Length: 227
Image 1: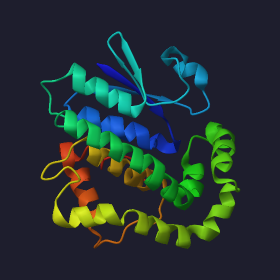
Image 2 (image 1 turned 135 degrees about the horizontal axis):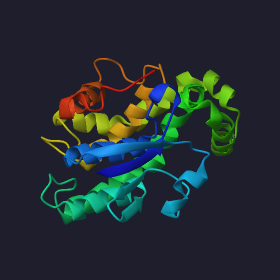
Image 3 (image 1 turned 45 degrees about the horizontal axis):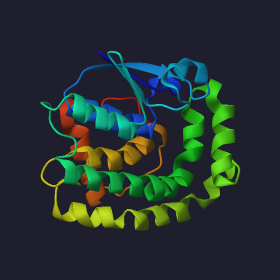
């Protein structure tokens, strides 16, 4: 059984967007796993990985840290399971997409949801989280609330290329989902689990796509505690 080390939030929430990429990759590859929730501030609990962040998987004797490296491992170690990338060209394109999401979508979404996330992480992590996030944002977490409306407008413009794609096809990867879908969806699942803010309008093509992802694997991503 694969072990997945991931962040634990208040009320049993699994809130790391990077862990959601791994969760969905494991479900896509039809690989059962056991969750090992850890605090963001508890670096001793994950010292065995040689790093300071999650997600981490322990697959037999193999330990892999970082969502992208985990996806690479799963693709190589389980070639007979459904592919995450669809071959070398898909792998390269997916890595480009992964970089765009991390450097463009994530910073655009963070100011909208960061105050809500702070309320719903494990209380033992709140001081650590505040220090980390305020270092990124260069402002107090509470001060992000006043700018939410403008931040949401910016985010909507940022995801417009993705919206345009999903007007023409069911998934980012075409007629069926694969790892690029999970990379993008992890942002929206992050918000869904931790924030009551309405990130998408009900008639947005992105909202319909999210529903399709939530329906996958018998509602694997849907049936979790949310905000």
